[in-house]
Image (cartoon, rainbow, N blue to C red; front, side, top):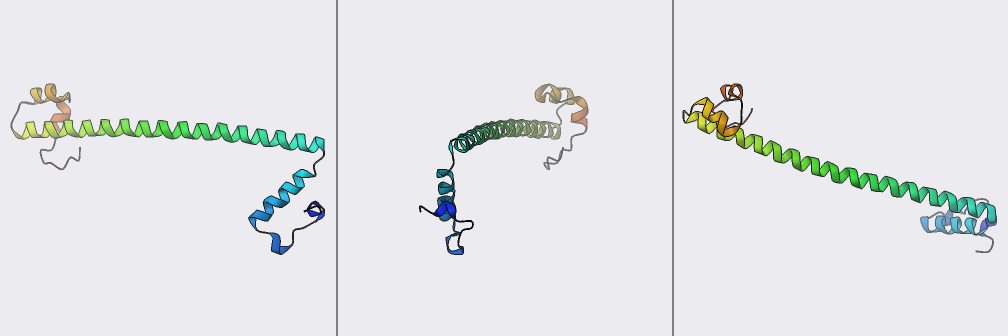
Length: 120
């Protein structure tokens, strides 16, 4: 290990990942004070940046999931609203009563298909 830092290239037999870490550690161990400070500053900057990006990613994912849930609920409510309106229309209930019951416009009710396909 004492002479690892003097090698210009790693022998083929020592090119596995564990040896990459070992050679990197040996290289860092031979840094002078200035190089070590620069290396540690660089490492700190990288870790800070990584932390910021990871936090933002987690926050974005959480917000996206919440938006998806809210959109799904709204779509489900709208689908149920149309289903109720379609059923009321098929029973011959007046459009103005359907509009009040479902909070749909008269135009939406007029355009309703009374088949249960739900393609509105």
